[in-house]
Amino acid sequence: MSTNDATDMEPNNISMDSVVEGTTDRGIPIVKYIEDIGGFAEQFTPPASAELLIGAYTDLFSKFKTYEARLTQKTADFKQKIPEIEESLAVVKKLKTKQDEQEALVTRYSLSDAGVFAKAEIDTDSGLVGLWLGANVMLEYTYEDAIELLVSKEEKAKKEFEEVKDDLAFTRNQIITAEVNISRIYNWDVRRKRDAAGKKEAAR
Image (cartoon, rainbow, N blue to C red; front, side, top):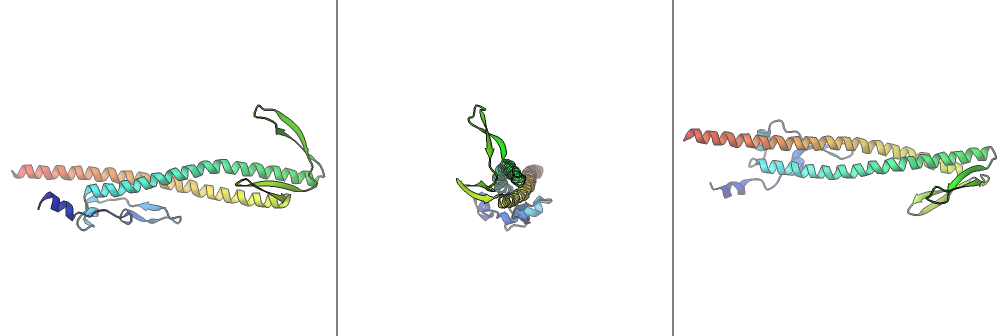
């Protein structure tokens, strides 16, 4: 059999399902760790080459690296978003306290980026506050409704932040598993070729 004939009989590719073991509850693939590389290669018809196995895990590795970058960006976004929500909530609670005490809120606001501030007195009698909702949209809420909304947004953001951190840690573990598999497959192939060359040489 010629080399070309052998190549034609090899599987053209290995599906991702072959190198993962299901997914997590949030749909992240679980990388399959190969204990017996030779036995794993023999599961395919015809047996998969080291190049195909390495290619499959390299593709999986690349997908995980892309997902890792997205999760890292989400982590950074939450680290900025949560303090902003907490700050807004603290301000509205302060306004509500002053309203209950029938007092105005005295504060300072920035006039320029040079650190120039002016003193201002906020009338709390109206009990209304404007909240930015994103996309240049601001809506007016009562203090009570604003507090309820901000508490809900804070709880949701913190819950999602924890999930993103968990997913990021898990994803990084899967990247390591994929890298270990790639290294072990490569070393297995080197040993296999070396042993085959040794047997060929001994048969002469």
